[in-house]
Amino acid sequence: QVQLVESGGGLVQAGGSLSLSCAASGSIFSIDNMGWYRQTPGKQREWVATITPDGTTNYADSVKGRFSISRDNAKNTVYLQMNSLKPEDTAVYYCNAYIRDRRNYAMNYWGKGTLVTVSS
Image (cartoon, rainbow, N blue to C red; front, side):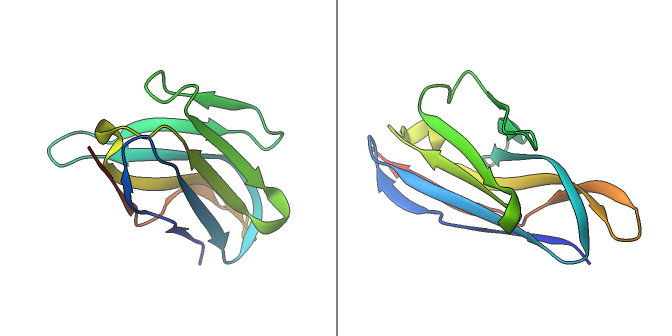
């Protein structure tokens, strides 16, 4: 059984910083792309950032220059450093990873989410 567990959400004032982490555990053979998405009530889940196994990153325009995604392959963990936070960044943030398990079965996995609230 493979699972993703996020941590690091919370309440922060506008202009502040917050760091999220997401650890994958279980019967993992390999992890391909890892990423972060976010969702607010009544809206579709929105892509935030992705990182490939070799460290290539991509960001949504709304967070480019403010957020930074990184990963530690030895720890099966992806991070999201969020700086210059704005009230519109308030959302539940979800970790995502494409994982192949030791049965050679690959699929997209999601964490349960962590709430980030940015006050004005």
